[in-house]
Length: 268
Image (cartoon, rainbow, N blue to C red; front, side, top):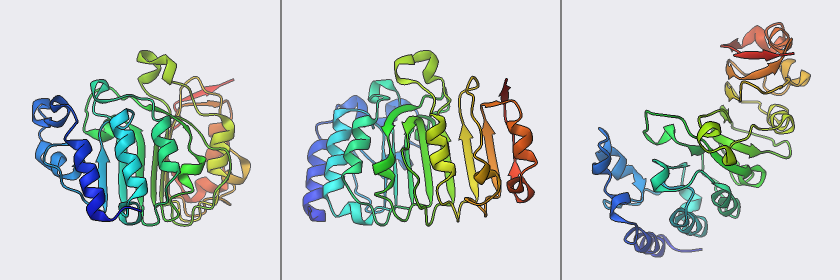
């Protein structure tokens, strides 16, 4: 595993080869550009923060190189917050499968906050594009202390996990991507949703779930019985569920102690 000094130099070597139009965020006209430059790997005012990193161009070769170094470095042991997404399509790709595979090879014992696939996460106030993540099962297992997990886009989760510390979970597969980049857009499966909701979520207090309006989801009964997430206090739900699911949710044991914001659509 690389020392911090060697890692810094390897990061810097990659940064210096990033096109200037990507590095000079002043040209993008963001009000918080000074803050962004200081906090994020990838720009000319480059400064490693061993506990926090935003990676703006998360679906391209440069990002893959940076993530590979991160996985192999001591920073993987100290980083507490990591966000991987893109600023706009000219800064990368919405296909994050390779990024997920690279990160899955590491281990992040201190990581508490993680998001991947978000466009709006990265200071964009316009359309909401999410990514193609692939199978995130192995990736999530590399984060034993995760407290906030945000997945934006199409992804698979193939088995239940014991989340010992997770307090906030965001599963967001509904976005403008399906209209502009249909080849990258698909909803999560019922199996994926079940594997998340039936995992041990003993500390979870906030759940965000945004799926396509034309979906046909159902809630697992064990989840509605408050057996997997007994401390859940707030659910923000939008998307398509079978007719009767909203009523089941609102009359469930879970709803007795949990504030449910809304379900947008119901299907027969």
